[in-house]
Image (cartoon, rainbow, N blue to C red; front, top):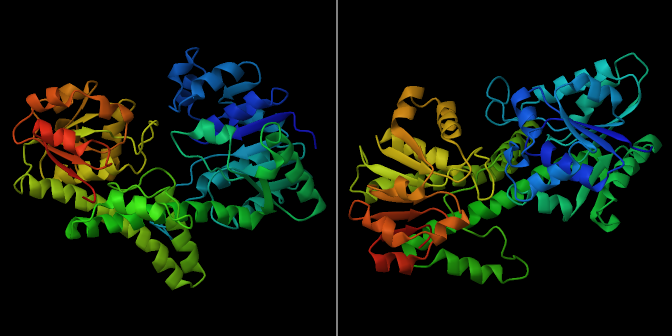
Length: 463
């Protein structure tokens, strides 16, 4: 099948960048990204590409090149579905907050709504591609909906999970470790796989395009994120032991990372992992294991989440205990709110939970993040429903200048590893802080010796 028109439902952190790169690399294919959020679509269409709703290094340039040529953003979902040969589903699949599986299972209501809309609108045969992270065997449910429309349209369901790291998403798309495509073993299923392979093969070497059955593809995404998160929780567990024994977690990580069987990646101790995927996907894996009666498997993976939660609580408790067991009415400066550098994504950011703990202790928070708005910070805290929205607004102030955020503070907590934090005039910051001035480095980012020479009392994870 020759693909000439692609539709992507969902203009978020996966759909937007992925479709922008496909459009850039496949100028012969018309790519339309649709979303019901009119404000988001308007930002994607903003003539100033710097104003697009997602910050990723290099993304605005890719959008600027392809938008209006063969890349389009629209709220007309029905029309884009009707016109497309291939439809990517890239909508949110959050953890359920209600009903059976609450707190662990993936909420698939948006996936089902997409499937029903595709079934209702389609008048010609389509290839439907799961791009969202989904539980294994979700394709079965989509297939059931699409194959019972009664209008004679034929659908092939593919799984094509994303393996993007926020902050490097464009580089990951341009030079992926692998592209994974799962489909049916039937002749029709194999033709659908080849159609999607032909799209990626425009710029990805064929030996990096891996094809499997649908179920292997769906499960591989969950397992990949679980393994990465497991490494973070493992080194964070060791960081606590280092603090008790006098070992240095950075030295331990370097020593074990030089073992070729282990490798150095994801061995950076920190206040904890965040983002939209790790926690959600592990909880989903836990739920799936429980649903098959595999309690020991579920317990094993659940411990990764428990360790991550413990690390965040431990960090905030340490701030309180070090500041003489009270932070009430003390100004605590947060450097960073995004869950990692080079993104404006705050989902499951450790900063949210550390802030929540300190607000319970009546601290006054002053936050600086180069890419996250005050509105987003308050939205994150209000979502937890721990206090009234008015209380959060009164106790949390955002600054567009890091020096102003730190002025008069009793302590600084580094919550995101933005590179710019290293280049600050720390002497100037120290001079304007309350003494003694503390730095709690939740990302092992700063130079301990340099800060202590200035006069800071410095603490980092695992040392």
